[in-house]
Image (cartoon, rainbow, N blue to C red; front, side):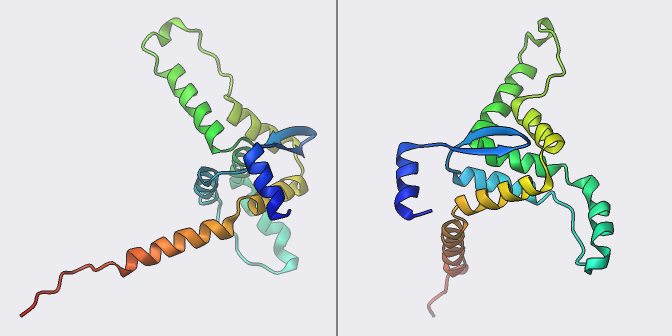
Length: 166
């Protein structure tokens, strides 16, 4: 995608169609908050051992039980951090309302949980892989990395101890 197209999409806030699990979703440009939220979720992935081609099936089967977080990562990439945060806040309001005992309790999942589950149930491994790869490219991780590393360097360079003149 050209820089001009990225700028025009950002200014116009155009949304792109992504199809996964037989459903099409309209998604906008990812924000820094989306990068942060994805990073939090990625940190929950299990460690995967580097194995030879002959043992890859066993390694996949060993770790697959702990990969439900992939659905959450995809849901964040589709909804965006802002929408996920709104969903969480709305869910908390419903459960912490002082008159909540008057409301009928339902076990309906919120939109984030429902999307995450739907992706795991209906999407193929290839679709999940393509979605994650495409969205990571859209995240402009190089720019984010540049900003964060330069700030980290600036933090390291600040004086930690005051020198005393004799």
